[in-house]
Length: 119
Image (cartoon, rainbow, N blue to C red; front, side):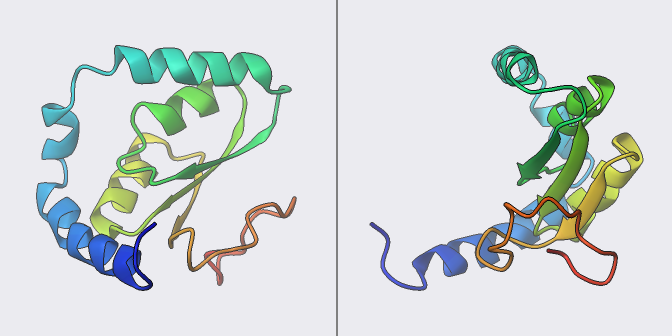
């Protein structure tokens, strides 16, 4: 188990890296067959129109777009504003929020996050 505060320090250090990588992220990670297959499996388990949280959504590819194409309601969450901007371009029907699992504990809510709140 990580020491208290360790996880927040780790993620704080990752945000600038993802902001810097930006659009090159999708160019760098092209082998996503397993990820796509896992999301196909998830889609088969869920009812049509299910609300899905994509925590660490990154650029929105391939997961958020794949879920949207299957008729799911997607909430994409990431700490990197640059990655969220990409997700908003590549999966525009998703709701996005700049947050972490630590800052938004009420994910089980059936109500989508409001524009004024990431949770």
